[in-house]
Image 1 (cartoon, rainbow, N blue to C red):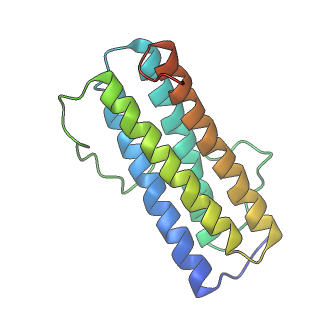
Image 2: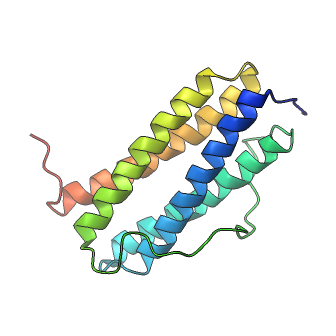
Length: 153
């Protein structure tokens, strides 16, 4: 299904594209920095889903609504800079805190974006991505809680 985006919708998708690229960079860099293998696997798994999100956003920017039921393109992301995020001397707890904060921000940005789209099908696609962002945050939160890094009172 093809869509025509308004200028505002295009701008919002460009913002989300930028957010997805940053998430990919962070998960990629942090996977190489963390000490714990479980956390490394969380980073790698979340990075791959973020790559799928970026592919979805690019499809929307190209005027196509992707089918969310099918396996999405697994091609490597192009134009993602491997710049170091925040430095090499972070603890696993600091890395988790940064990733959780990032996921909270990105999920909130999707919430705003969803409300700005007129096409229900696009809203559904963006809602799907937002739910996956929330799952990323949940996986990081549960990891932190299990390791005593996050205490719910």
